[in-house]
Image (tube, rainbow, N blue to C red; front, top):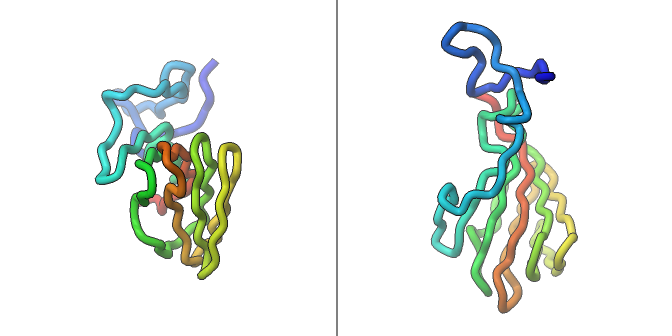
Length: 134
């Protein structure tokens, strides 16, 4: 049975019928061929922007030892980091701490925040964030 939700990206099919979420389009298995290279590792979008109507996303970031994807920053909307592997250094409004596998880090809207790899192995973490719907 299909769920009666409509994707922001694919509001209608070619026959102008609402797109339904099915088991086939609701499962995203990691595929290394679909990773996005960064200057310090790679990213993989499990739930990409514009897939869900509300802008919710889930992305995995993989960062090389002692590196960061980008500097601390601010933006609209909350963000959550969930560490899968490695040791992360979390920055929030001038303070830092570290966390390892299964730690979460909540970044409230408008806060200055960042995450970097504090260890000697790859850091893998999920980024859970809603983007503004366009």
